[in-house]
Length: 260
Image (tube, rainbow, N blue to C red):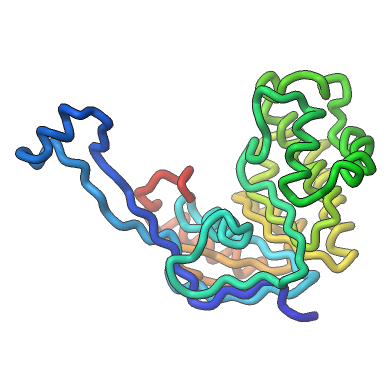
């Protein structure tokens, strides 16, 4: 099958600000005293990453916190733009994503309202959401709470609802970031079965996880990122061995992993 995603020497830079202040007094003092000035430095979350992912592949992205895994997913999702290089996604490919807990949800709205809001972000019209609504609720298994505001949900309930929406979008590509970090074992097994069915239909999965067992279960290929660079791309067991070696010998990235 042809490529659905292609990254060509993709790099992504962020600017990190230290001693940032909104105080007018501090800004004024910064004109005269260096210690009051906001410092800005570059941080390259990704450096010259090149890879190609075909339709029907399931690829595990592994690496330490701050290695650039989530940044790569956000580039593919269109949340970020590359600083340099090209990130190409097949024109007709619909992308479903579960990248950050609660993204696309409004905490003050109910679960019911958030299904319509979240699905509309992906381009579904109301009639299309009506058609999948009952299936989403049944899959999430949180029916009694659908008229409660999302802010009252546990993290596990939010993941259930978000994943249920993502897998009912008829997406061509699923971007999943640590979906097994919350939720019970039964729901994890349900997610794994769904992802296998998704792959059997020729769809594509990019899966970020620190769980070796989950990567083995879901993925047929592993990409190991280290300090923003693609260190390994290939067999799952070799990739996990490479990751284990990194854990043993490489210091973690000194960066706020939430940014990446």
